[in-house]
Image 1 (cartoon, rainbow, N blue to C red):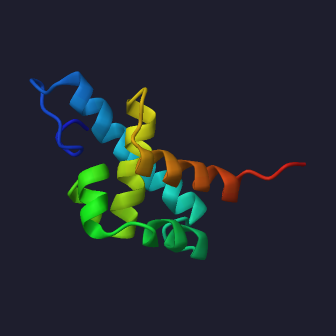
Image 2: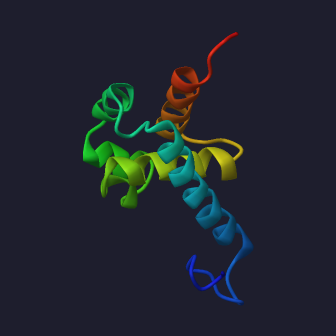
Length: 100
């Protein structure tokens, strides 16, 4: 399992946590279809590739799906997520949590 997720026996636990959170981010995105939705596209369109690279990660510029996964990973693994991550995560929550 560790090798499949890019981990090794000598890996940093903090980095491992980030990898796991990133993969969970992909699962959340897939369940919500956020990166393919008009709401997701609208949120991501607010930022240029350079803003995403600087404010989230260079890897997040690879695709909308990677951007969403990186944002979710940061929110889950960082007590003070940056603006882009927090905005993407909040929009996912707003569009997927309904009041009953």
